[in-house]
Image (cartoon, rainbow over all chains, first blue to last red; front, side, top):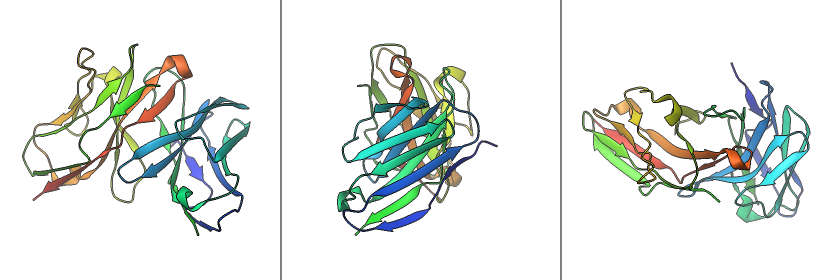
Length: 113
Length: 110
């Protein structure tokens, strides 16, 4: 069973804090993704990584950064959390071959107060 | 960048009725298209992919390149089909990133 594990299910942080969301996958996938999921907006791509230390901006990278020092781990960093970053964050991993399935973590519900 | 549009945020049908969830995409090359589903309190999971031309849980989807659409269909909806459905597009030119639509919440009434 492919496992994509996000370090926290729920997080509450204060405005201005630096926040780390961690994601680990155990299937040696090359591609990893961070999305935020908001009602009415669906899943919006924040960043993705196609190899260790390689990253690409998605559609909404502002206010976020990422780190991929090891193949199995992809971290999302909120440099200075703001209330408009309150959301559900989903991590996914996938092999880059044609038609391959993406596997998702359970999500982290982040509330910034 | 490639885009996915799901025009219906909410869709409600009665059990046994046909259902169609619409998905349109914008990409001029050869796309990879998927439908993902999220049942209540569960992770997002793959429902089907166009490359397999498969039927899963009675659902099918046909890629129409002329209309740039990948609509999801089921002839007879069941209550257990109630869920959030997302259409997704992946393109190989950009390291196989994957983008999703806004999603359609399907409710199947008894």
